Image (cartoon, rainbow, N blue to C red; front, side, top):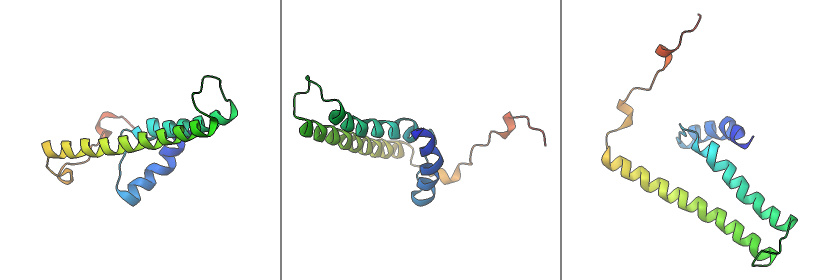
Length: 110
């Protein structure tokens, strides 16, 4: 559900406002569910405390929250670096490349 909502609502918003195109749906398919899972794990610390936790509930939930933010920071920084590396090896602008059109591969009734 979260992936579908992300595809339907956030993808058009990110494209329109920031020019961010998630052509493979990585954010919707992997990003949003993982953030939701990380945040729900904080709730589970309170709902189902376990004997094997090394810290008290409040400290453990804080660690869970920090882990979510660290994961987002690492993903953002590594994505930025990967984008810069790809631009370094392929500095040509993508504005001169025509958009892909797959209509030639589909038969439709008009």
